[in-house]
Each structure stands twice: as C-alpha cells, then as structure tokens.
Length: 356
Image (cartoon, rainbow, N blue to C red; front, side, top):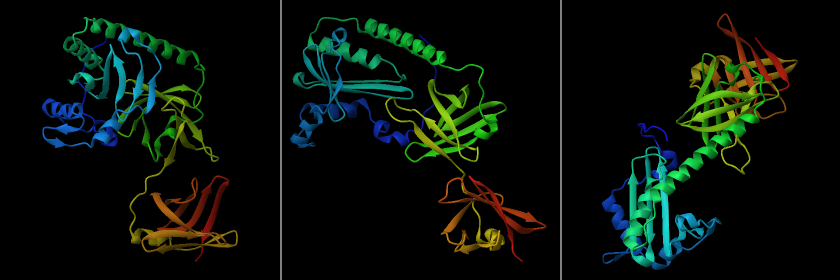
C-alpha cells in the first residue's frame, strides 16, 4: 500500500485555527470529561450549559448516505462536531490531520464515554479503526473487523484515484506547447486571500512554491500546467495581458468554486531619497510636459489632466505605477544622467525626453 517515510515539520501558522493546539492525552482527557459533563469540570462550570448545547446542535447535513457497512445512519454537523448514530449510540466526533499526524476525538454523551486517538502517521485511517474497536468493547457491542473494512475502503479509494488520474490524462491535448518561452512564466503571483505562488525554473524545468509548499510544475497542454505539491495535483492556467506578457494564474482549488486569480506582481525594492532624486525633472512627451517629483521619499509622475501617479521601484530605472496595473515607467541613462522616461503600457510604449 506504499512505504512509510519521514515527514518534516511544517509551519502551520496560516492554518492556526485548524492545527495549532499543542496538548497531551492527559489534558485532552480533562477536556473530554468537561464536554461529557455538559461544560463542568470538577466543581467549576467552564461552559455555559446553553452554549454547550449549541455546540452539538445540528447546523447542516454532512452526508445523506446511509452507511450500513459502517453502522452510521445519518450525518449532521454542529459547531465543529460531526453528529451521527453509531450502532444505536449517539456519537459526536471529529478527526484531524496535518503533515505527520492524524487524530480523532469521539464523544458518546448518552454513554458517558469519550475516546481520544492520536497517531504520528499522515492521512491514516487508524484513528477511526481504534476508536471503533474501543467503542465496541466498552459499549458491549458485537465484534466487527474494522481493520479489514478500512483496508478495503482504502483499496477502493486508491483505485478510484487512479481512474480519476487516467480520465484527466484522456482530456489532455497532445503535441501542444506553451505560448511563451518557459522563462516568461517565472515570477510571483498573489491572491490576497490565498497568498503567493512563485514560479521558478531550473534549466528547462519549471518549479515553484505556493506559500511554503514546494511545487513540481509540468506542462499539460497549451498554457495549462500541472503542479504537484506533496502528492496532491492541481492545474493552473497562465493568462496574458494586452502586452502579451504572462500576468495571471487561474487555479481551481475547490470544486464548485470559480478559479482563483493570482496576479503577477513585482516586489518593491528599497530606494532612498538620494537614489530617486536623479529622476526628478520635466520631460517632453509630444509637447506635453511630464513632471517627475518627490513627495517625501516617494517618487511621483504627473501627466497633464490626470492624477499624480505614485511610482514603485521594481528594478534598475524601472517603476510600476502603483494604481495602474500593467503600466510602468522606465528611465534611460546616458553618461551618468537620466535622458528619458518611457511609459510602457498595454497600448504601446511612449518615450518622453528629459528637458534641459
């Protein structure tokens, strides 16, 4: 079924609400005891009884399947708890999984039973197997071979995964190539909610990072690429702007949700007031006076009849217009002096010569 391998600890700050509680079996046993006693621990009331009741009040339907093979007959969801009937016993439970660890906590409130299973294995079904074996013994239920059931379910899931991967390959258009040289896809792309994707290259192979996830990138067809991150595959589409430059990545991270846009951006570089002063001056653009000036330690450009545009330094003599996506101002230097400024924008390039 595969080999066990060591996983490095991952920084999970970004998913803190899901996986950043450090605890122990002893502490968790006290927590489960408090929940089974409706918010009380020893002589203290830690959770208001009404609030405790709200935790386990069904809020949504988690599953409509009647899974007689697993002896559960409905699937509801409360405030962070799955709610089901297990072999005639009310069960509240939730699993957890993060790189290298899998867990399950189950409450059987009508039986005053709580079960905590912690493992140091990634994505394993062991917590559910152990939970069910323990519950069956303590509730006096007939024995079920839960290990065999879990193994059978795993084999079916692997087969289904292979079939899904084959279907993806059958939709691939063969003998196609990207619209740009691979080097033109290199860069950083940002989504305000999901963070940064960086596309890199090593020789003729693309790679990258999605926040702190390492990506192995391969061409799928046209401007569609596949990215593998720790065994999980996603696809993204690379889109060009009107200047013909790769500007956006569109990625489907969740079924039923529109593709997420990650827009290319240039990281600002630090520039002192002294560095920027050499660009200050008037420039002639086909008779129009273009003025570059400093406001504090920030460089601006003024185009007659328009607003003042803040300039963000992104490279040698190169500035992004902060509020105008796809627009840049690129200065030219000769003999140590700035001689021109070129507006590089979607409808062309326009050069303004510096006035004496």
